[in-house]
Length: 466
Image 1 (cartoon, rainbow, N blue to C red):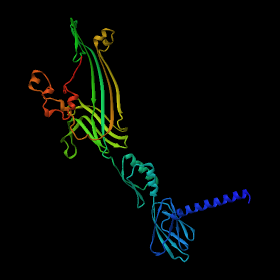
Image 2: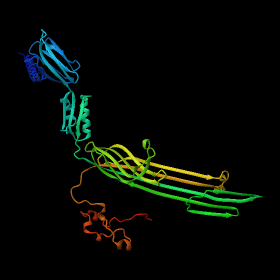
Image 3: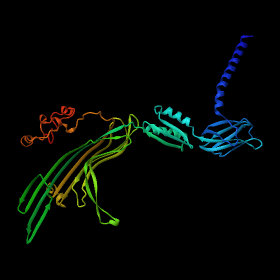
Image 4: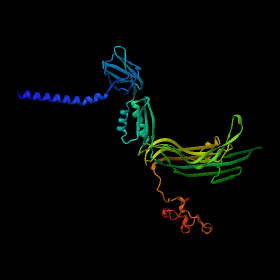
């Protein structure tokens, strides 16, 4: 035998061994995918579970001549040979298959349940959500049932997307979000600065005289209300008063409401008040007056949803309102309101400006006597001028934080440093509070931390500083 022949023979033997090994490995797999008919009792139906889009081979110990399927829309069958039948699941549901021999005798009955591929759903969920160990997947009456608990809403949405990719219209969601008591504290800062400038210049005068037998009288009323200064000139029948006013204002509004709520639950907060409004009724009680109450002040309402350890979904409404004018005849005062309502997604500890406003209003009015008010220089005596400018800048910031309750123990409070003034302190010394030496031991801060932080108490600088 030549070396070439030897090498060729070795390759042939190796190939045969590989084919034999492959056949031995593949044989159990093919056998596992098959289904054998039970012929002990032809009237007793067997059961076969099948996934949509998957197929199985049914093996029969006797020859099959005819196959009858109950619903061709649920499953489809094909006779491969006289002892093998291929069945394919088409849609979720139930049907049955009857097998007959060449004499039309019933060989076997088979109940077929076609559902969705639950094992594939479980495998895909494990791939995408490896840390969610409590998700359970079941096939019930042609539906995919998701149950158990997930750690956050994002994981639940992902599980639903995966399940619906296998069963677009057959998923029932029984999952529950296990927040593990996750609580969110929302810090809201509403900051506003407003500047106003007003300038007014007006003339108030009368002119009297005679032309022959006729008496003349004329008046010009352009006086400035609440004028800071005025200058008058009287000359014979002419009486003129020049009044002027200039006003500048600066206002600052800063509200910082904080509120804690459990993930998935709404929290609300209001510091302010309510005022009544008379409401006339109609219908059977027409003419009757009922009273409704309108809230004002600093309010906050929000619903947090913890998506995961770093993301928080917030539905919130923040408002700062104050009474801008007294009640009118309708018993309804005018409210000045700053309100923002939105839905955002923010990470734990991040700050987000959810609303802002820059407003610049200019109002300029001139009242004058026609003709005379247009005369250069001297025309100023016959007109009054108003100039008003308002500048407003507003921003609303939010900062959500995942928080936990404090450990059991004493807690410092804002009132820990307040000392009730004695009669000597209040009436003789003019103090709003007593000294720290006069504080009773029972009123001191439980932990002492508040006293160390502010030894001077709550009294401090306020008002104008020049």
